[in-house]
Structure formats: structure tokens, C-alpha cells
Amino acid sequence: MGKGTLVARLLEHDDRLWLSRSWTTRARRPGESPDAYTFVDRPAFEARAAEGGFLEWDEHLGHLYGTPIPHAPPDKDVVLEIDVNGAMQIRQQFPDALVLLVEPPSRHELQARLSKRGDTPESVEARLQRADMEVGKGREVADHVIVNDDLDRAVAEAAGILEEHRNPPGGTP
Ligand code: 5GP
Image (cartoon, rainbow, N blue to C red; front, side, top):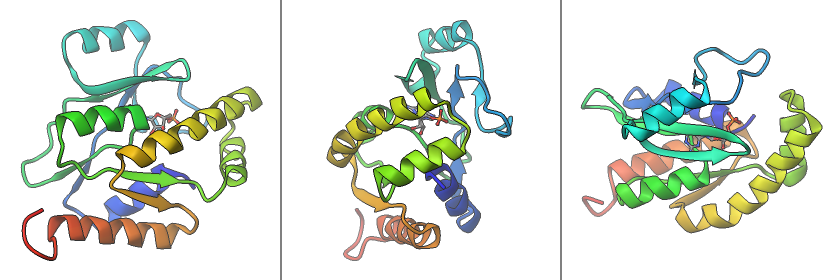
């Protein structure tokens, strides 16, 4: 289970959270929910980017991914499940954003997860290389690193970090 599963579990436990649905030009994977993304073609994505419709966007292994300007109810906290380049753009615009880096327990484990998901061997290899690069950059931008070794433990850790961010021990953050 990757960071998508962790985020889904976090949302089940915390109704103040509101998950942003990203746009992507990647094709839907077999068995993937049609709601996982707003799936669009490149011209549609580029048109939206040109009119300033994304908070951030990034090219990831040949596909575009972007966060549409969110319209969350005012009492909600917006959750973005994005890559490290996206997180860096968000950090610049929102210095107070809480950035959590979710790391797989090992490269071997990540490889197993990606292969099980039905990615081609070439895509698995490209994603592994990308992940190596992201770990270094991610640790620079993240407030906390969560190792996704055990899902329940990782969810509890993320929930604890969120709670402390909302109610810091000595007052406002
Ligand atoms: P996947 O193709 O596996 O669904 O996603 C590939 C990568 O793109 C993942 O690291 C995912 O978190 C990231 N991603 C998904 N949506 C967005 C987005 O809106 N913006 C950015 N920058 N990355 C995203």
C-alpha cells in the first residue's frame, strides 16, 4: 500500500480533511477508480494551466499532474497527494502548509508494490529512479518523514502530527 492508501485512511478518520482531486494526462490503470483523478488529454490540461487554473503542476515521467485551485468548504483542511516538485511549489506559496513525506520502507518493497499494481517493468524502473531522486529533495521540503512500514502505524503517526499542527503544545504554530 502506497501513500494513496494512507491518505484514504486518514480521510476516513478525520472529517475536517478535504481531498483535492488532481488532473492528469496519464491513462487510467486497469481497475483504477474513475474518480482517482480527473483524466484529461494534454491540450485540455495545458489550456487549464495557461489560464492559471492550477495551484501547482508538474510533469512526472512523461505525464502532467496538477492540483486545480481548490474550492473546499471554509471549515475544511485541504489535502494534496502530490509529488515532491509539487510540494516545493506549494511550500513557496503556503509557507505554513504541513508537508509530510511518505517513504516506502525499502526500495525492494516499493518495487514489489509498483509491480503488483500492474505497471510495466519499464515504468517500474523509471518510477524507482524517480523515487530515489525524490527522497533527497523530499527530505529538504518535508516537515516530517513517515515511513510506510505498517499502514495502521503510519496512519496513526500522520494523524498525531496533524493534531499537533492544529493544536501546538505552546499555542499557535
Ligand atoms: P500516479 O501516476 O502513480 O497516480 O502518480 C504519480 C505521482 O504523481 C505520484 O507521486 C503522485 O503523488 C503525483 N501526483 C498526483 N497528483 C499530483 C498533482 O496534482 N500534482 C503533482 N505535482 N503531483 C501529483
